[in-house]
Length: 342
Image (tube, rainbow, N blue to C red; front, side):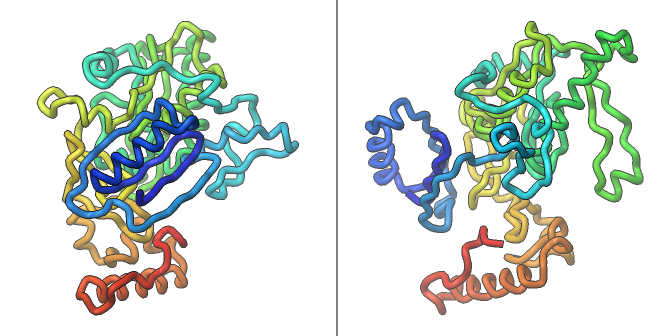
């Protein structure tokens, strides 16, 4: 079992069929994992994780609202070093075991939400994920980190208050600001979209369902929408949709980024060869980007080259040199650092 990662019942891993069956049988017979939901997808012949790691964490993905500030008398900080988050100064909290959105199964029920002009469907993932694929008609928050989502969501829902106050400026459900050419060329963020009026429902989705457990819990806790607006999320996430919905009937466009060596998958959870992963920042990079001068295999890409320290660049170059020796059969086992140590 190559990569068990435990966080309140969430985890992932990769193994051959026999090992997988034994691991699942053991876990499902254990009192702490009874009813464990599993998903089996393909790899293209290789291991999807580099090595065995067993970790226990309080959470896999950080939204920034999980740790109540009142307990310590200080504002909570996110685990990735943000100075503050949108929830630290409010009473909103995140506890999916107490409050969470309503599951919608992949297929017709989910597609009906996407096609309804009065329903808001939100992609809770980050920019580097949405850039390579998302659902038709979905709203993209354009966040760099999941800790930015609560603040974005508060701004997005402000239009409902404006409607109650008689300040609604349009009959359209969502106001999408026009794109400024200069800002788009420099890669800076645009003004984010916001609601003009109350939606019939709000639905959210993410890769495998973990982030939506938290995002819907936050929205319900923060009471951003009236009680008569249901909050939904896609059961099993994008991966469940791609596994169960035929491509010819699908409303998914592009590919789905995954956090392992496959980088992205297509319908049927078939691994794609369109993207590889930058070692420096883990972003998916296309063949076109790999041909650019800013891309150095195993080291960096145009998205992270200027953000990495000289020490990091030196270590990544050494790691790639050793990987080349392994590929050529000169060295038999890895000598390099853990690739996630930066």
